[in-house]
Amino acid sequence: MNILLAVRMYISKMIQDSGPGMKVLLMDRETIGVVSVAYAQSEILQKEVYLFEQIDKSGHGPIMKHLKCVVFLRPSQENVQLLATELKSPRYGVYYIYFSGIISKAAIKVLAESDEQEVVREIQEFYADFFAIGPHLFSLNLEKPIHGMEWNPNSLQRSVQGVLSVLLSLKKNPIIRYQHFSPLARRLAESIRDTVLKESSLFHFQRGESVPLLLILDRRCDPITPLLNQWTYQAMVHELLTIKNNRVSLVGVPGAPKDMSEVLLSAEQDEFYANNMYLNFGDIGQTIKSLMDEFQAKAKSHQKVESIADMKAFVENYPQFKKMSGAVTKHVTLVGELSRVVTQHNLLEISEAEQELSCQEEHSQSLTKIRRLLATDQIRDIDASRLVFLYAIRYNKHPNKDILGLVELLRRRGTPDRLIDSVDDMLRYSNSGETVSSSFLTTKDVTKITEKIFKGLKGVENVFTQHSPVLKDIMDNIVKGRLSEDAFPAAGGESTAGRIQDVIIFMVGGVTHEESFAVHQFCRANTGIRIVLGGTLIHNSQSFMTDVEAAVRYSASGTSLKYPQNSASSGSGRHPKLT
Image 1 (cartoon, rainbow, N blue to C red):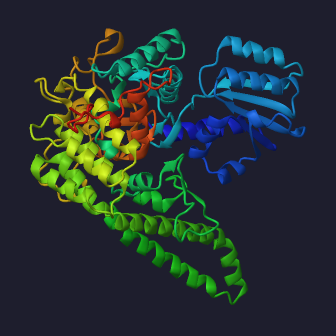
Image 2 (cartoon, rainbow, N blue to C red):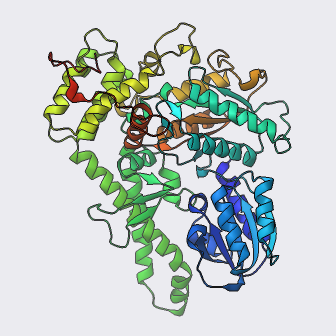
Image 3 (cartoon, helix red, strand yellow):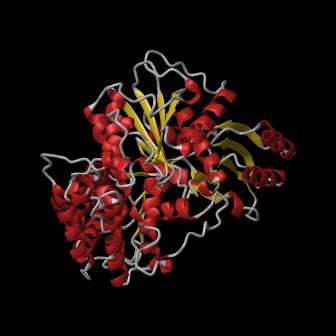
């Protein structure tokens, strides 16, 4: 179950089916991203694709009848109209059209009527309507999908289309289960099931002895994981520098080469990254040193060009040498910047406090440590705020809680109002999931969801990686056959009996690289199960805060719910929203 390979095979087949000859690849804004995370541009060029165009910007381009046009678009109404306009006045010789999802008969009729010059050779559905970040990880790149704890209608439709595309690309017709406490998860699950039934001819895949499972989760079951500092290479780069479609911007990074404003981080294209993406930051230094030593040895050998044989060897090895040189520069720059940020902003001490908050039962000790850190100028406002978010979620019901006192400390240090208001946003967001019984994990007793999130762990060697996502417990229960039918009912009341081998997990509200790493480790330890993880977005702490703000403060139409502001505190100085 490799979703990255599935997308790569679709793209390769699109280009191959058009036959030999020079080609142009015509895409939309989203399919450009779908292709770019699966293939490097250099790989596409090797397949005789010499021109890349975006359909909403290509209307007045030159006529080039000698080129074949491979069209790869999302099946949206806007794209159908743009393509119809293109076909009425075709600029290329022939067109091979591929849609990334299910296309309606009405749309095909519009295109057929527009093809007056009969230039269309093929129209097919190739199900790659998602961003395959890795073999087991995908995203829909949806920001702010939830408004006022309800689906944004466009985001719901896009999520249905994206998940259906994943199922079709993997050729799975699964049982669909969802978290019972979440109307968001239920609505998505039911919408997906309705479409599967409607398009039953597409979902003709036999289930066999093992039954595929599509599990719809809600981010509110674990609001902690996206708020924590990360210490594995991939997750750290995303938290501190942000990865978007496998690309990292280095604009403004001190010491970054001028010709390296953006770098590609893809395990398919970068051997060092593939081998080290899940490595702890403390171990990266040694692997970087080994990479440097290997590069320097090759650089020295290239300096000895004394004969025709040496020249020939140099020319043959130069592309590989140049590629290695770029990899060395890229990773030395990235690791150097991560190290600078960690040191400059005291992230080790902050992370230790975060792990204590999330994994231990030491209220007094944690409160003292947070107060001390909030009084430190060295830490950033965003990090100070995250500590208060974690404390508020963790100890909201504690008799001696001091959320108001910590909010006041944030205000004294000049923290922006948006971050101060977000303390209440986080409480509203996490509390909205508290009606769930914790049987969604292992126990039958009705407890608060946060009690399960913050588990005490013993015997953990690394103080900075004690935390374990709730997702890991859910995966354990799937393997053991203990996933509660009350907490995770099946859409349509379908039977949940049967051995489960293939699982697609989709999280409404986004997933994290820490959870992706947990899936990677879990599948290595449990060879009898294959898991693909996806979500509306791949979060770091800042994107999660933005999503939470939209989910809590805005209605489904996008207008503000106009909650009272911090300035409306009562005369006693107590914050009206935190009492």
